[in-house]
Length: 457
Ligand code: F0G
Image (tube, rainbow, N blue to C red; front, top):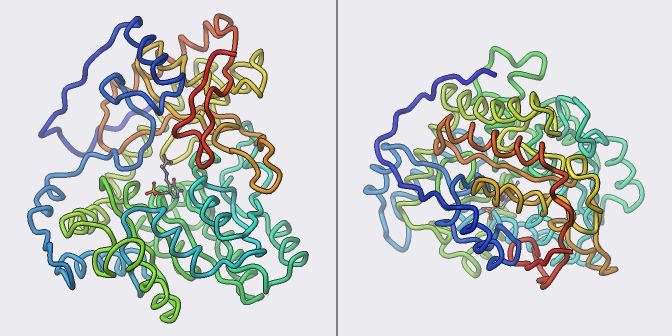
């Protein structure tokens, strides 16, 4: 498979420590068979997340020194605000400490108990905030998104008939907003098309329902639009990004993804009244409305990162590295979700380990096997992550049972990616040696995948 040369060179390195299999066994047992609970020093290639794990550029590191740490009205806030306005096109920019800070504020502003929020699949923190405020979430994504073998180019698209059915059943008055994401993380980083996003907004707006977009990976979504959606091939990614945001009423952003930062985020809005309400809550939960829980230097690093994120050379290399890993695994017969997403490759663990029952968590089991094989850390995105239904207490059983390998931006070389591919191909070849799955030893109430402990079933 193709591997275009990276449009950067390395100026500073962070040494890694290799471990023996015996050391990894000890570490994994101590971590309760949950790679989330490993110490990062015991991990060789960390594909747990692409969130906050990016390598900043020399320009971003220089920008840190320009941080204005004034409590109120810091210059760095205005630099940050201008960057978001320019590249995303929203008028009101409210800083938050990271994505879920923005989700908390938006959910608190708009959701009342007994309401309903439709969306293109869910993200755990997003849905958790919607549910904490009393809404019920309804997945209105196209069916293909739940099928790891479908080659649909836009598995992030909304099924407009499903959205219409939710509106008809509950009525527009009990739908505070439609919650969209670009790309859809839980489906494997799958994009939504500009056409579908625009039509979804038209349908929602015709009923007076606003639409908010999760833009954590919207630049990656824009790159995939350029390559998959007719009519966009010759347009700059920066222009496609604005086209994705244009029909929506606002956005929540984790700057730890596309924006190449280690921390930070924002809530971006068009409605001045909603913005005023949100600024009031930011004061309570995040910090003053001109820093929102970030240091001035963080806002500078994000502003620089936003501009770099839409650079065509950057985004091409970023997505190409993800595709390279996917292609290597696919060629070797490892069942991976297709088409490849923008930030991760997902292994269909239910297909890879058909002899492990779903209630023994095949994806969590595969995550452990990948770590034991070569010190590679991925994350379960299946039944463990899906958690329990808050009203019934029953386990939710999503169709997708995935091991996600998320690739941090500008961090790993091709040799690292080859090591990951070789290790996962070896695990797959020897899959019959994995004879049992896992059961919960301790199950936390919220976002259980982060802190749960397991034992061999
Ligand atoms: N929305 C999406 C689509 C995300 O992927 C995440 C985080 C958030 C919101 C929350 O943002 O972490 O800054 O509070 N995703 C990370 C991941 C944790 O590993 O996928 P946050």
